[in-house]
Image (cartoon, rainbow, N blue to C red; front, side):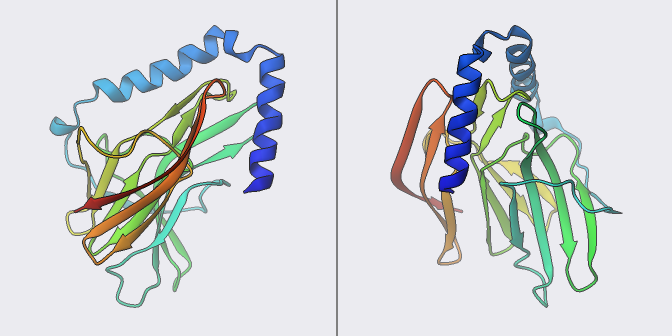
Amino acid sequence: KQQKQQEKGERRKKRQDKKAFDDPDDIEDLDDLLAQYQIKDLASAQYVYNEAECDLPTPRTNGSFISDPTSSNGSVFFLFGGECAVGANKTYIYNDFYKYYADKNIWKKIDTGLNAPPPRTAHQMVAVKDKLVLFGGEYMSASQSKFHHWRDTWIFDLKKNSWQCAVSDSGPSARSGHRMCAYKNNYVLLFGGFYDTYKVTKYHDDLWIFDL
């Protein structure tokens, strides 16, 4: 973690030296993507759920990889999102969703249509009973010159095979790098994290509890 923060700081200095914030094309790309998700009417999105066997997911870091709590033998896992840096100034952020059958060494890509969390990295996802709970994370422009931190909560119902965005006016502030765990079969605990746009950096030490 310390090494990653150091590398991130070095990249920050290089971009600041190059005045990366003055890149209008890069800023437009990020704003356009965020606007797409803000205007998306998830409530009217048509239900979609498909699993298709696929190749290995692309290389990535900072995704969420957790076990399926409904698996009878504990050999099924879910992977969501993450990032892949290509060279010094290019990063891809994902919102792809995979299911891994470890006993068979088979990957399947899950398609839930429009009703799905936007791309993100450094988020957290935990399993609680028959649900997966995802919170926060960050999205960045491809050249890493502009950041957006999410503060949304998404719940994937393993019985209905569908995502739902849990809308709330309260809760943790936008952040990434936080930690979450299940508590007493019906709660999620969240601690810490950070908010870093390269212009403003905040580190959190707050503790939250989410009641499903």
